[in-house]
Image (cartoon, rainbow, N blue to C red; front, side, top):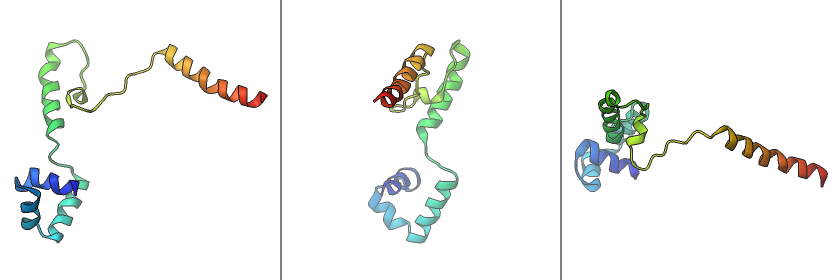
Length: 100
């Protein structure tokens, strides 16, 4: 169903019901196959890429287009201390398990 919303928004520019009237089942399968090969309609990624290119000359920071897409988080790189702490927790479980 989600793909019907995508087609309605990007291809027919209509409601889902209207898109379903306009697109036959065989054509729907072709659109779906095309989308799997070459996704289209990701306006957020396109806008984020343009934003990144526009801001890059004006900042010393490395920019990632995903920074400008709402709801998508870029995982923060752990500090060496955080990695060490997690390893101690992880291997501590094995040490306790061996003794008991």
